[in-house]
Image (cartoon, rainbow, N blue to C red; front, side):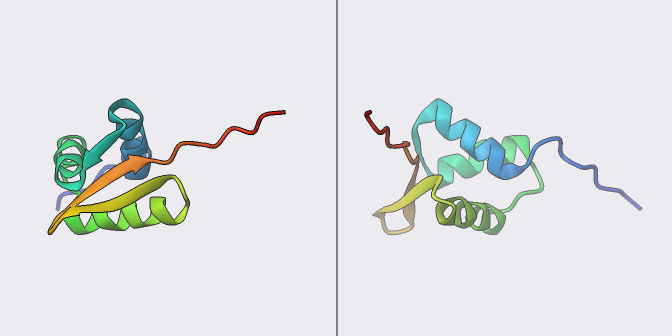
Length: 81
């Protein structure tokens, strides 16, 4: 019986790190990048992570064409004092 090992970092954290480096990426490209690091993550799992991050206000997902989405990091607004 095979046992799964715990990852040292969550998928959401890896997605945020990737978006900091690349600024914006398509969902299929992001899936390929995430799948290289986490081979047990499927496209449905990625969509769930993206939904959670968007609800938390950390990323923004917009539609490019039919079946393709753009994922980008939300920039924090600075207040001037």
